[in-house]
Image 1 (cartoon, helix red, strand yellow):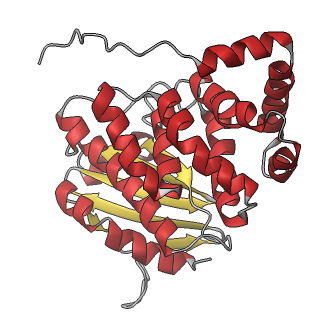
Image 2 (cartoon, one colour):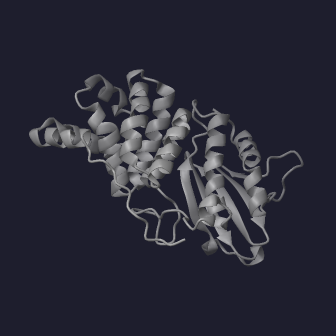
Length: 288
């Protein structure tokens, strides 16, 4: 557990390079004392604001989540409707397992989103931008709950996987979620379940619940089938371990997957999953 003010200090420090790249500076709330952390706190909600001559960012921490809003334009001309949600993530600073390392991890994700929003990141420079959420977030939202973003979150829980994630993208020139999870990440996830690692399980299922609720159909399938359902099949003790960590919607989907995979059609589907066709890279139609 970490105090919200200490979390804010760590966040501002961790984001230092991004603030410099984007020309942003911390906005000090009115009435703040000299040694106060520059954040506005209203009951259970804390807000840090960064401003520049050409835009602003608001980081809002509330209800175990961090919501990042961005706006571009002359600061004095910006209104509430000018702000777009550029990231939504977990930030359960009031939980026992949440510590400074988790704050830094979240801050790094925020930094990437802010850099992309202001066009100073490597992705933005390459014209990649960020994917738009397929299920929620609105037409102009840049919040993403796609499979690659899920992989990044899991690699933040198991830092050993970051090299595998980078290699996956480098080797195939596109993220192959099935390869990453079945060949690498699932092993770590299942070990945490077998070991009943409470700290890891709280982190994992906070991520799974959020991505299943907000994600596209591909993300939902990845969570319910590839990661959980297929690996919990026939593992009653492991299933019992994780049931209380799952929200009702995710639990219902996972139990349905397990029931299906237990039948004849499911067994044929498992054989297909275990013997996938080799991936053949498609030629890009984009000319650089």
